[in-house]
Length: 253
Ligand code: UDP
Image (cartoon, rainbow, N blue to C red):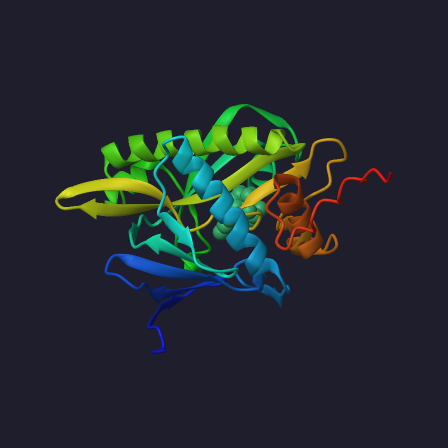
């Protein structure tokens, strides 16, 4: 088979040209990085878990009418997505204070926010993805006012969906990051949820125990990252190689 053309290699994924024009293959790696790649490791199985979890969330979003770039999963590590132009923003939604917001504003981690707060960071590794306002976004032409209205509404819909899905399995969605892509249908441009949605890009806390089930386990050396992500996958019923349910006892005459 001809070798596929690599388009881009990121920290957690590699992108290859897809089989048809306008498609891309996303390969999920086992690499974990944090603090702008200052801390790095290879966590066996992480790529498989994120591939399956991202598929699960993107399919669910599609079912409630939130457009995403997801087309189909190809195998345990790869998925086919629509190629899109990524808006150079990290869109962060927060329900509870944590991480950089807690530091910046001096709010204890875990404090419930009066309402979901949406923040934007400019995607630039060399600058450490700085927080920006809508003024910067408009002035530098990263997105139009119409785009920003659509992005806000997408972000809040993803938040409601993800919060509900997680709540149903006893997990609190503390915050998350999404990326937005532009796709073109002829002259018509649409915004879709792109990249991935996985425990790499969310904060997920067990509601009962407060146990962290997300990338903070890696960032803060709290134990096994694979165990944490597996627990999320297990609760959602997307664990790879699900052991078959125990067979029912059969009546012996
Ligand atoms: N996040 C991410 N990629 C980034 C920055 C943040 O996926 O480059 C996610 C992070 O996992 C968390 C949320 O966005 O769920 C908010 O992150 P925060 O701003 O608190 O940054 P951190 O404390 O992770 O540096």
